[in-house]
Length: 74
Image (cartoon, rainbow, N blue to C red; front, side):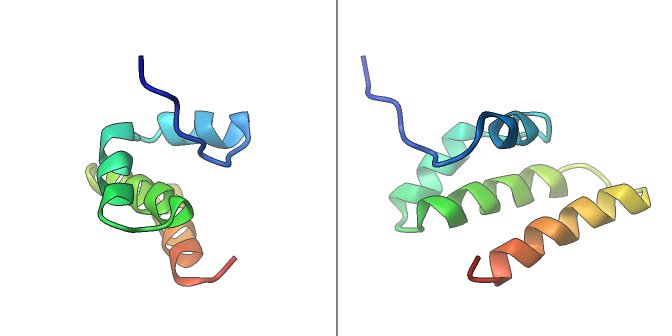
């Protein structure tokens, strides 16, 4: 059995990721490529959001919010 990876996320944050086509395997690959845990989570979420058409204002707001977090140092 493998050890679980620490994501440094609240349960509610993780649930939000799962609801947006989040792919934990992609996150592991991004981490293995040398990205930080934070950036791996954000990049994975960004890919999940971009895989479906951004048709509504809310879709665009979610995408831009994740993109903004990726660009900031928060």
